[in-house]
Image 1: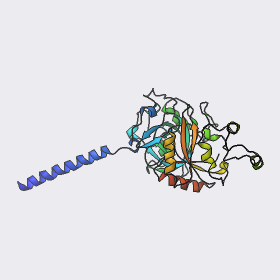
Image 2 (image 1 turned 120 degrees about the vertical axis):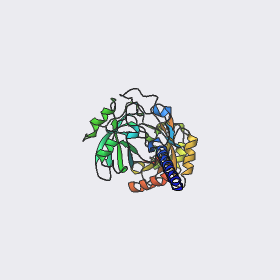
Image 3 (image 1 turned 90 degrees about the vertical axis):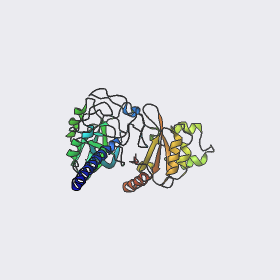
Image 4 (image 1 turned 60 degrees about the vertical axis):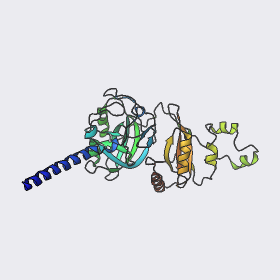
Length: 332
């Protein structure tokens, strides 16, 4: 009787442990479920299998802000993951239907849908992928590929890969099957500039980067900044921009220097706080930029040198301050 009682107790304890393990497994979220996207980021309810073109408003996931924007020069290196069963046949952020068996991807900020070229730096494999969803939102990863895309790149069993992601151009609307047309493409489509793309304010040359000829400056007796000088150089009327860039001499020409973008903010005060926080990492400046919809954003940028390896080292340092989405801006 006593032995039977102990046996029953052991059985019950085993069942309880199994149940707890099952609950724990269910409670562990997929990396892309670390936060819930707002309606502004999702762009409203799905509109059918064909999807729609969208950029989206800035959104926050797990305390990190993401600012979707058009970036024809996007070229980033980092970690790629992949997703499958948890999202199979569910709507994507632009209203298409995710199919884990087709070639597609999720990206935090690129327009949807877009075509990107993804190179697996671990084995040299390269494909073009249709981006039609938002993510990933964990560990500073740069892109989340479908299971099929990860399989073609040779890391579906490994789970993660070191990749390079380059923007190719906008993808045609037409649902998830459109992604298949790009999986075997060997040459990228012609360079494309979206008709809605507005060059950001920081693309114009600034006085600190291209100062006037020494003779004319010495002969002039004008104040440091005047209305006519601003008009002549086509600088947006942001009073704090000139002092920030002129505060330190440039050793390396802007055209050959790498920069690190820590983030972009709609509120200049938030941008200033981030710049102050990164003061010990390097010289942080604030650059106003205008989105295609007319909204002005303030991005925090740190100056680096002409060496790409040095730039990536600074990027990692900025990321260690909590800015996991920091990225390298190549010379222009």
